[in-house]
Picture 1 (tube, rainbow, N blue to C red):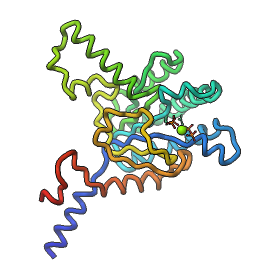
Picture 2: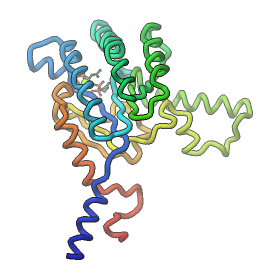
Picture 3: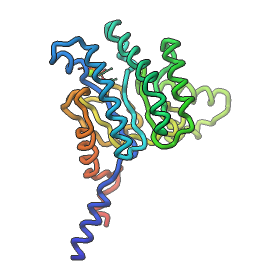
Length: 252
Ligand code: IPE
Ligand code: IPE
Ligand code: MG
């Protein structure tokens, strides 16, 4: 009985809850193609999946949810598709911002602001401003985001401080680099989910993913529902994260 109780205790211990889940929302185009629809229709359905993912994250008590919505490389797509993605972001913020705010969600945007159309920039700033004091949940929107871009931006900021004497070379530690990334103040993602079956990061959170767990799911983004999210979180809970150390099973 004692042994069984101990085992149960260990199981509970193992059922770790992710504090931060980041999602590479991929497969909108293929979802549309499979139905004989234009790619833009896949993106529209993708927005519905975004809403459901935000709801599910709140329901599951996941404090930080990061969504990769537009990469620094996505400008390579046809102009009408890029236009539609920008339009959908605007619609999402206009329609959903008030609800997010009411639910206590803080919106944070990561990625380069330069190069974005002024109306998008001001909408993103408005979303951050309005929700800045919220503490319940944090929705991080990665828009015009690329990890290499972000790291280069951080390096420029640090170099500036070194040149002006505001910082010394010895001050440049991993923690110091963290503080200069777009994600400053946000814990590293515990779990990174990518839909659509692709097995790559596509320039997403390269620095922050050092010890993240990964879930590469075959489903296309518009099909990613509450159950798929819950299953991924349940699967994560069974993982043994060692961070370079040894298993907790062995250690105890
Ligand atoms: C993800 O779906 C949305 C963005 C990258 C903005 P895709 O548009 O990449 O869909 P696939 O990968 O072509 O199916
Ligand atoms: C990654 O998906 C970017 C987003 C989900 C916003 P992509 O569809 O752009 O990635 P690749 O081109 O297949 O690597
Ligand atoms: Mg894709």
